[in-house]
Length: 151
Image 1 (cartoon, rainbow, N blue to C red):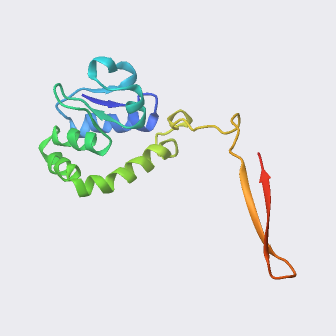
Image 2: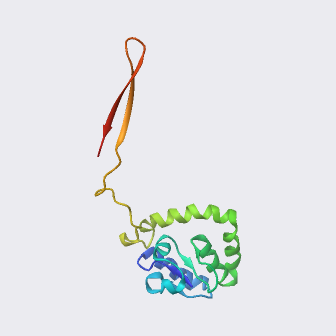
Image 3: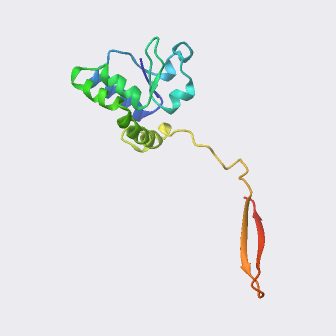
């Protein structure tokens, strides 16, 4: 089973492309419609990345999930899945995947609902910042003055 974010237009469009062209031998389901507990995956994991679930195997996420879907698809896609699953390729694919996930609301098919939740600092107190300025006095001794600023 391939799980994607059904609330995201970009993710839903990508799932339609996967279903139409790759045609993996697996269900393609929005995680919001799946029984995550029975599948052994959390909502947090699904919010962070697409998931590939096979009974008896640990879930695969992000590029590894995409690679598994490609390997389970039509023959023409399988070599791309094998290539993407290689550690050096996957190591390069993760930063790209994370960039796409962070910016999916800006991509074709994306909407404001696609944006990942951001941690808000508007209602939280920021840490106190301490600045130390060092000045040279007339007698060539260094003196310091400490300033504390809160936001």
